[in-house]
Length: 353
Image (tube, rainbow, N blue to C red; front, side, top):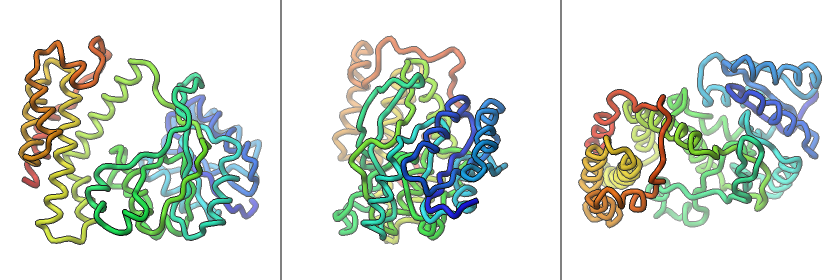
């Protein structure tokens, strides 16, 4: 195996046939000084069958390692630690790297070698390859702004969330920040923001103003609804363990009276947004109204919390417009809420009140 400068880490789980496309796109880079590390994270047989031929055909470029602990945090950490390159590029097993991604990002890193992350724009594509939304710019994360928005560091360079597949970063900085927090495994849908936030504290984030990856995004109503179901289960899981607020307190070197107020603001918005989502389910609207009240209890002077709360008492025919969902949206018959999710969310709202 050669000594690469960049290691492309691709966790394998359920990418299926798209894993083949992901690996092929990594191999097609115009920048040639790289290796590909495939991390078998209890991958499906289909995914593994698409990946193994690359290991045999390109042994000097592609190697396969195994991580038995389930979760993308474990898988990425294993890949980063096993990497030989100075720089790490992440790629999910259903996304696509455009051929100039590494070339563009390495050039930026060489210009700004103290950077913590080099990111880029992305195209959102459907599972049949259709472009749904081109040139998506990374977005600001509201809770980080609440935590750090008043600091000079944040004012100089606001924290922006980047999809994992867009990122290139120094391996040493990733190790220095503690890698991905496995407390978020198997998946709480927040491990990416947490990792990027800790990297951000070690150096600024630079962005290539060009779409360098394609991120597969669900297109149809069924897929959107399926994703929302997974989101609810994931959020309920982390809510039950209190992991997110525990981690947030670790970030804050502040007196309790100050950080409690910041966490109340974050709680209020999360409760309000989740309650808005629940309003599309007639049988969950009473729970949604209770959550709106808890959001108000956390932030009594928040006009958005008041607006959502008052809208929940509109006639039901106005709910679709008021809470931004399709009036004829239907979830698949297999969809169900996790047991005890309401009690879990109500417990969130009382922790810092």
